[in-house]
Image (tube, rainbow, N blue to C red; front, side, top):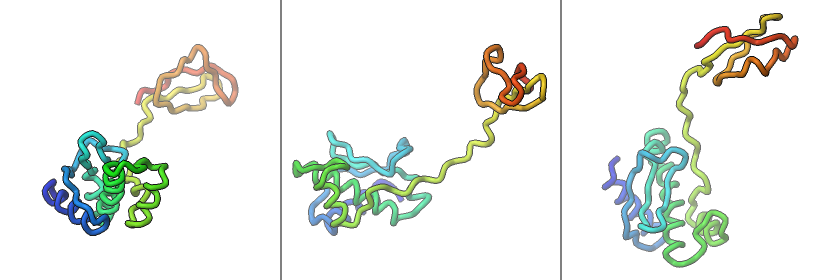
Length: 152
């Protein structure tokens, strides 16, 4: 799906569920990471995260579009368009839009243990992502001195 198809879908959903025209732009935005979409207050455009279409398909994107159109239409009417506003919650229910989108599956970044420390007394191994000040910390098991064992 590309931006022109997304624009057509947004316009159709706006007419079908809200009985109002969508007169601005709807685009996919690859830079979105933690959200399914966003409504831009100044330009009145809508951005949609393309990863949601790739992972969950059109049904999830339609839910995101309905949610963002709730922000859009309420904002243009001068009513409460924020997540906590009563008008927003009521319109979400009315059109069947989700309050939150499904979380994306996390990309695995591998085992990120980079440093291993060892106790000089009991040989307990500690895995850490960040450096540890070995002059200040001691072994939690026996209280002995800790030293850098291996960089991973």
